[in-house]
Length: 118
Ligand SMILES: [Zn+2]
Image (cartoon, rainbow, N blue to C red; front, side):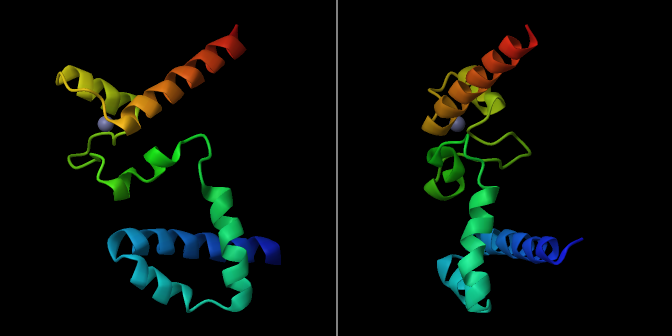
């Protein structure tokens, strides 16, 4: 592994720890964790984290854990997925915003996949 790879790997691991900290312990705990980094690491971390964001997902889906959108509580697929969209429909509910957007993405990806295969 090159030095740059080891450096990036270390920042990826830190990014995952930071993501768990902000979710589990809140922004103050995340800020305290960030304070342990060198200035160089703090400047590089946002670039590493940006590379890890699934840009095909809308912010509503990415922030569903924070915005109170129903999420995975019993091993069920979380809102924003095709399974969760169908779960809303099976229960006679209107799908939530994350599921409506997730379903649109699901159908777009299915369409692109079948178009490529043809
Ligand atoms: Zn939903």
